[in-house]
Length: 257
Image (cartoon, rainbow, N blue to C red; front, side, top):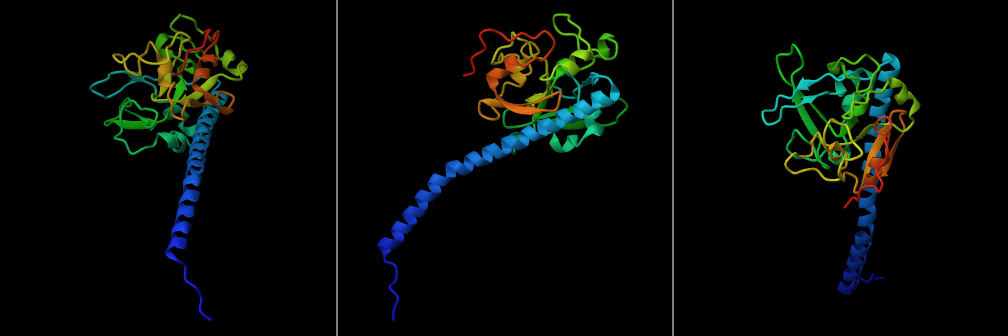
């Protein structure tokens, strides 16, 4: 008994149907990859926040701002590599990067929505430079700052001269600690704009919200708080977070285009 072979028309129909099924599945697969990467990024931010919490709990103090000069001829800025003091309190080297900001781009000093920042500096007494890379910005208002002669357990003095104590951090559940960012730290102000001045660049000290207002997860951003919880929020909600004591969200909120 002979078996009938498929006709050319039948094979074409099978191929066409298979193509349609694959085309229908691709958006769902792409969405699944996006959600997976965003979730992993959120977990990394949460782990960084956990390390920060453990540091503050054990030291009974804030992370002091230790400024190094970046050994970069085009940009001389003091930086604090938070990965150094927080290193003993978690797997910092394993969670400093966001999978959405890995890319294969050439390493740059300032990061972007799709690439990490890379800061090359020389620790005191060292004979060579050290490069630290990351995809998250630390809330700079949570630094202690011995540069200004402030006592321990004191927050960084803000641009309006207001100095705040460690007590505020413990009593504020939703104080942001780490956020998706293109620089290692950010000290936002309520007056910050949604876009940066092209002449000043994304690290403009007068508009530091631009360091974290980045479309890394489309129009959302991952935030990890001092109490170690984390969430994904719309970019516009960055202006509603209590970055420092007495923070008052602007009315109306800036429009994200």
